[in-house]
Image 1 (cartoon, rainbow, N blue to C red):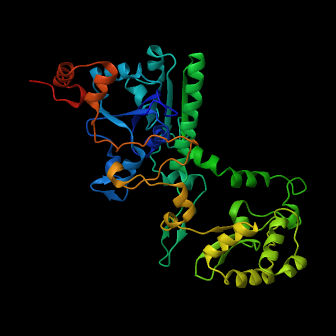
Image 2: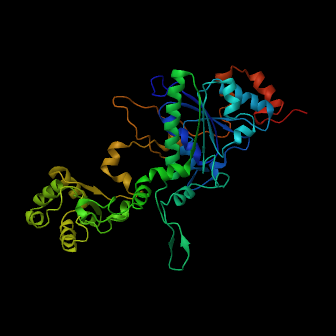
Image 3: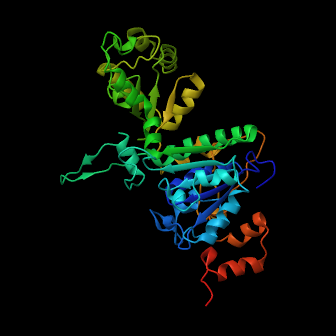
Length: 415
């Protein structure tokens, strides 16, 4: 990584399986060095989910981009010793699997802090280290259903199914974890004090959706203490977007070209700007609304007026009009169409297939006036074993071959 990258000089040893490996990807994108430790058979993330791109899953290509892979078999005492040597050169160890797996092999936090007192150790798992679900196997969508983010639906044949939704748990957990790692590394650099962090992907999903769960909790209090807002005559709404179903000044509308836009003139000043811009000042005069957070809930007459108004321009014209006349309106994209959006195209430059095996999005973080390092292709199993042993531990080819001859590093014992 370039020496001027924000996290240049931070080295992370990652023992991971499947999606939780995403915890270090944001750090790789900012210049950290990540060494992915794999068993001889490798992390089967390469075969998980869809699509499979030239024989390798997109998930592996994305979450393990920019990492170096070494084969270390922690069932082998010599390999355990090698891992401990590597840890002495590192700032962070990540256990991205069921918690306690490394401790059972003699390389948990208590073992490692003896040889590296300032080591930051982070374990990320489905349900964390405590609680009745701590040993329950899970995949990513489980954290969304557990956190109440996605609800089952039923098809016309009466079968329940999971609707399409944005996955929260598999992304939120790694981001919170990366934030915690950085905080712990900063402290370690200052004080010499290491840390043992743990994060559950389920916890992170719930934390990201705090607004709805905290609203329901607030509603357990008497209505004299917790009400709706002034614009709704203090009537309570359902939490989050469920409370927006009857909205009018904050609602989606179909444009002339069949696409949809999201209109958001819930502040009185924006509502005035809109009415003046479309030449309908009488709409404001008749329904001026409250100063803030007024969605004109249930006003079907106004909703019909706005429905007809929005059919007079194409979606793109409405966006341009909102910019020109200062009222909030947004495109309604899909995961398939968002790449065509001009704002997306201005902000994101895809990493090409030639570099990473599939077109991928870069980090959304931007250091103004700087260019962040581009990650390299996700590794094959053990691709960098020899390179890492030479670079970090100073081993030569003879020593590497000798270790493999004794069955270490995924090798087959001689004789």
